[in-house]
Amino acid sequence: MRRVLVIGSPGSGKSTLSIRLAAKLAVPVHHLDRHHWEPGWRYREAADARERVRLLTESPQWVMDGNFSETFDLRMPRADTLIWLDYPRVICIQRILIRTLKDHGTQKADLPEGCPEKFDTGVLRFAWRFAKESRPQITSGLEQFGQHLHVFRLCDDSDVAAFARTQGLA
Image 1 (tube, rainbow, N blue to C red):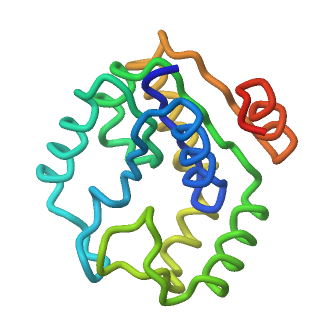
Image 2 (tube, rainbow, N blue to C red):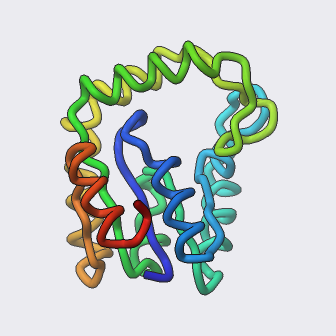
């Protein structure tokens, strides 16, 4: 594992797992939210965000967390491993709400400057619709760009714990 994508619904634990995995592998971690958002939660111009992601993929080693299916064509061919956190929506929604209450107003490391944690109905809607709208994009991306990837589809905390043990993260 030298170039790893971590994808999944908001609230599935992408950032937490990415940080742990990158530390274990001694590779940089790239939180794609930092490259797709500008201060004030403004979405970065698509061509600029895409170029930022392209440059990240050119480095020899990394862990990247984030969905952004519009860049699967850049990321999947360069990756060697994909970790898909395919959690139930109720767990993701619960975690989003807890995170929002706990961290509201704070600037987190996985978010760009000027984008503090906040209550966001858009994130809740995205998590609620993830299975219906994003799973097909992930499956299609894997078929088109990622047939070579070593895929770990982790569906709950026990799957992640077992993965962490096998990878020496526990």
